[in-house]
Image 1: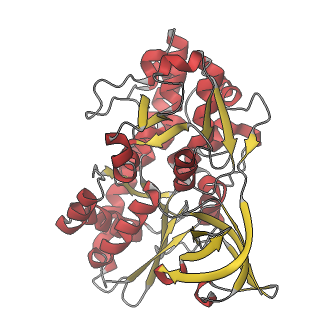
Image 2: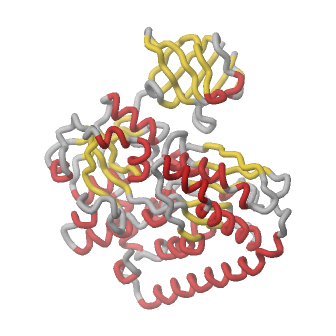
Image 3: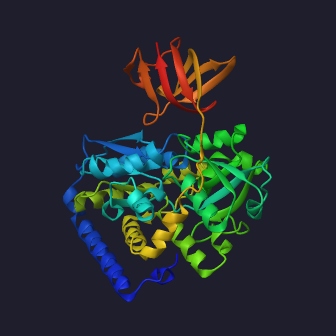
Length: 436
């Protein structure tokens, strides 16, 4: 990654950043020294929530559930870990909750889309963030993220150069998510002809919409997620990788052009470097601010031990996820570095990330039908829609479930119930299930 010099930082800014990094290192040392104070029973009989700032099925959900399955045995006292999805606003809802509403005792930590942590920097007064990412209790990252832009094989866009001549209809989640913002940055800075359809509940819904022909691609998708969820389509040539986004090229994609090489001058390259700094943040996990130093050290040590666990590595390999540990101290330093960028550069990126036209919104389907099946402990419902057997995913953070006007849990859904289901296509997420 480029240093501060690439962003035109002055000497005082460099000294300030150095002092911040030094203080972070000293704090980490104190936390490490205090680790022994936790004792072997620190988490005994506790329930720890692993919060996931996305819907089910995406790469963040995969990593959240992987950590959930393996980290408990590495925490003193072997607590029960419970995964919970909070997919609102591309992860912003979870980040705000961790900041203001969650306990600061290590019993909740979460994974949020990396772009959310830089949203206050780029969105300025328009930001919906209620947090300062420099003050989160950073635990570590499971891997860095190199993202790609993709096009479905039926699109006239064959290579990235075609984006200058043909529209590419891409699906997106919330306005603050990378699926949306990266499309705008590339559209407004380099002139790529993206048409953005916003409002899909999660990345897996965007993928399904692409397969159904509702959209033609994605302007941002983690390469690890592409390998794990779309390996068959990739091998069959149904998905074309147009370019990759990251500070450095992914070793598995030496011949895929980097977005940094598309810059036409030094200013554009510096802007792209800052914009894609989040690739180093990767699949990061953070706890609320103010977690005691000893408790944070415990979480950090357990997190690293989890990523070193052969069982996790084996399971990650089967899901085609790579493991590349990034320390909590490193993440703290990245936050300090990003937020010390020159104001004029931040203002320019803010301008570039804004829509130039009113974009279309994803359209949900609505059907009144009978539930014919319940699977995955209520996380999937089956029904007939116009004579076609259909499945919809039920997400705790996205799907509103009511019966006779009263809210209920997914566990209350039963075969034979007559319900009005609002959902985003077969195998997509249900926005609402209203049963009689």
